[in-house]
Length: 384
Image 1 (spheres, rainbow, N blue to C red):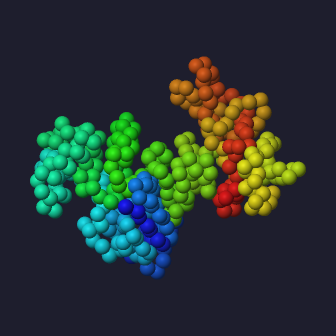
Image 2: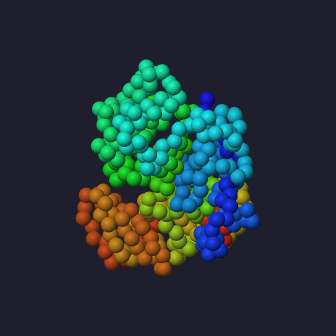
């Protein structure tokens, strides 16, 4: 078993900076206390055995700091960390039975691939036959057997990252931590390595905690994703749950490419039914949304209406906009439009036809099942 529990974890960095830098941190929404700068706070998460958890968020949100606290590379300011039910706060990193893959690969340049992968086993005085077996098994899983005699400088970025992963998995760790392991690779290699990590996950029995700022990686890799901002957890759920039911404006804008569109709107109730009205265009919300809003007793109010680009349809009626830019993406066009003082994107299928939308007036419509209604004051999704 390799379950992980983080209970009320907090990380505070004592002041080591000038007053000017402290003011800059306040501007960046990091909380300042008498003890220092709070990088992570009120972090609560239960990770099941063999689960793949992804921590995702913008730079500076606290995701890597959280990972490093699990690894023991950062001291936990307050809160409790358990791995397999064992209290880990004061346990040395080498005794936590975890392995970590870094963004920078961190391979020894003077060692061969084989020696890099075998190093941690050698310093534990593992029998030579067992080292050989484990390194060969890991190399076969990662398809790097043919590179075992090479040095890192003779490998591509993707091959080096495979070696770094191999060095981690030969230890059979309870928990495998990965800190933005693909961010140094080009787009094509990132796609390939994502697929390799998915395959790897099926072949080894360990728990994964993966950190990234790339929401595509989060959506494709994680059983559940943890969206973070300014040291706080914003939402935890499966990728589909977070995409379909974002809990606030930040999550709705961070998850999804291109990001969600927003309109000024009014939430009204007519004949017992909720509807949204924007620019004179009225849409009655879907039944499941009606039930959730009714259960919470939501009143009529001004709201922020969110609609994803792929849920917008061009029609004869709807919210009026003018196309500023049309990007041909093969099977679809991404239309960038001005709607009042807002920029809006719609994804329109081409269906094999060349259509010129540039500088044209269009009408945007959508149905009540794809509307997300957020409070103008708090930014929270009014359904949840």
